[in-house]
Image 1: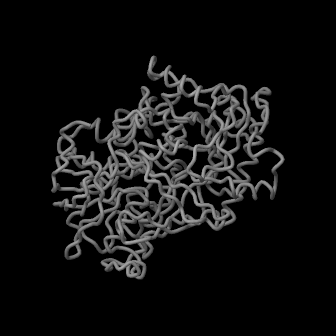
Image 2: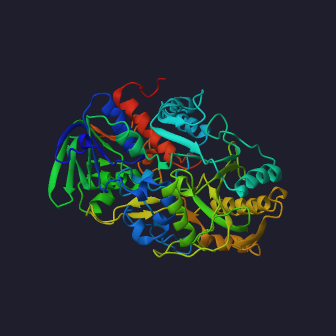
Image 3: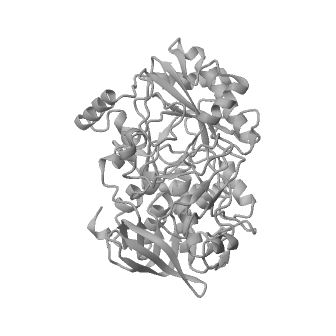
Length: 549
């Protein structure tokens, strides 16, 4: 982190951005490039650490509690009544770069129809063609630029150059058994089919939003202040004028915004901050002794992707989930940087498929992981063991959940974790997608393209079928950590922000992150969150007014 961007004690700028994650880094970097002064406030520590920078560290980052605690807020959901009352981990990046510094680096824009549906609801300026311009600008794609893809942008996008043989067999088996296309670029005109995965990683480095937009852009008018907890938005006469913060040493101060305050703290942080500042359901705020300044449905519309993992002993995948194998990889990567599994995401292929419930777009995503996976779940904060054999794990992933939940304050104390209630599988149709997807996975893994390489279904075991499989999923289904929607964008009374990201009824305050999504995108949400930051900068600077191209 360059000294020109630290500015730890500065207390005023044109724009104050809360959160340095996927959207926050992007909007802050672009605003600063315009010549505006920008202060970015981040509760976490620096991302200048091997744990964050090296893509292959994603494994221990999420499986070893002591390591995870260094970069994660440690949130849990409330007991999920449709999932055997399980309390689910809700990882959120507490580090510069936010969740873009701790995620799996799976680069998926979503389906173009997702954005057209936003626009059809009245969110002018957010159609597929309009957001495409922001995507093109943010990308540095290894295949180069075309009508859909960008080159030379802040986020490097590559494919793993040495995928496992089993990964390539999976791609062929999916095409053969289900009759779908092998797609070269699922982020271009059409998503449907099976593909090698694209990752925001290159040259053995994670390309988080902070790497792309803060460190590499290196704009002198941007000041990053880390280990600073924002506790409240200061609102005076109906206008946001700054934020109250607590520094690492416990001292408190106010950081003033000459033009606007922009909340980019994610689906948890942005909603929580609005409520702490008097913006939310009036009765809920009153219950916590908070004076209501704007009665808005903050914290509603919470939804997320879920997956069910199936693991198969496969001899054409050479990865082993044990400390010895991993340690050898770390050593090899140190000797030959960028050449081992440590240089890449742990995921190697994706497929976008249709279950019987699909309508106009694929409603199922498969993630391929050439490793064993935890069974039955990883709810408990312990280091879970995995099967030691070489394996392929496929995640049957629900990408358009019908279930909706809420996020609420547990307390008016800004350091208290909020109540995160996803209401997972409240709609039984969601369970059916996971189950049908699991059955499709079994069909694929029995495909001739594997040539007998698949030896056994380790988890959950092929004896579980029908209702028994569905019952097992209730204890096995896991979040993909893609929560969205708690500060919904729209033009009706259910909206928290307008299509130009302004908080309804408050001047000088916007929300710019995945919490504004009216409905979740079809695929991993990191790329859309970065795009929202890019698009948000356009809107703030007036270079792309909502409703115009």
